[in-house]
Image 1 (cartoon, helix red, strand yellow):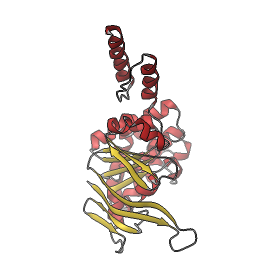
Image 2 (spheres, rainbow, N blue to C red):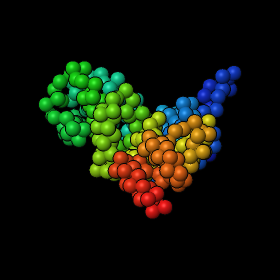
Image 3 (spheres, one colour):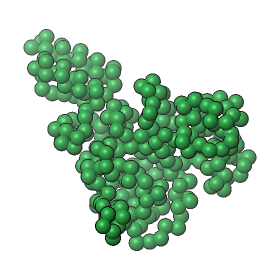
Length: 289
């Protein structure tokens, strides 16, 4: 489902001495089934933006349309339950959300809360736990007896079991080592492709934003500074620097390599394979010269 922000502004502590503009006049469309990464410096408005998508925050002015559901600053929100059934959110450190005595009960909590029968919730739990790469035997265990990586996967399974159409990932690799980060992002990429979600990821990782996204939103002081493909965003090197953002490591490496070879054009590449191909192409150019 498409998500459309229309002149959305959000104020924290309105009409008090502590009033602060968190978002200002946001006009933005996130296309259905896209994988969109939202990046920006701390305090730029990333998390505030996505918290409007599942109704955790209401606009101070303007509106947001999520599929057929509209949240308008001038109207009372009456269908939040239906919205949160369609929009799943994986918070930073989602394992901290686990609370039930067994993994099965924890995964079933969301679907049952949305009116799904216990039998159907259990069926979804068995399906979801397989989707995140865990065996169904784990369903009878306490979530607090699991490893950190397993707990995170259980929390993700809980979101899966709701069967949302939109999934928001808020810093999904926080606290993970490089191998764990790769595993969890590969999982989300596969789920995005299999389930045809609209995936929205808040991240500080330029590497993850570049490699996994087909669209990027760059936030700056509560406004949208850029909205484009990763290739078109990361070619704007000087603009990103002014916004306090780095290039992915692959491009940082290529920039140094190009400088040493006295070459000026830097092609946006993000994977190891594409970086290697670009180096080979550049070396051939130098030899011909």
